[in-house]
Amino acid sequence: MSSPRMALVTWVLIYAGMFSFALGWTVRPNAPALGWVLIFCSAVAVVAGIVLVWARSRMAPQAGE
Image (cartoon, rainbow, N blue to C red; front, top):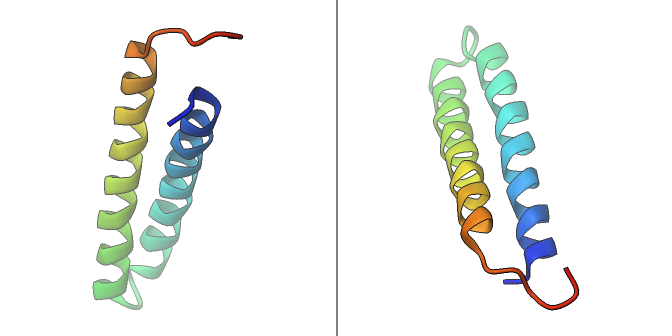
């Protein structure tokens, strides 16, 4: 995966995860199961984004960067 594409996927995962967390937290009082599923999935997305930040920092520079 190229560095710009990895950066795009990384930040989409992080921001979508944060948005899903807020949505899950808001929905949780009225629909507890749905709220917790959203919170869990958002946590997985944010952790995946953080792992991609780390992986991108370990990549060797490519030509043109």
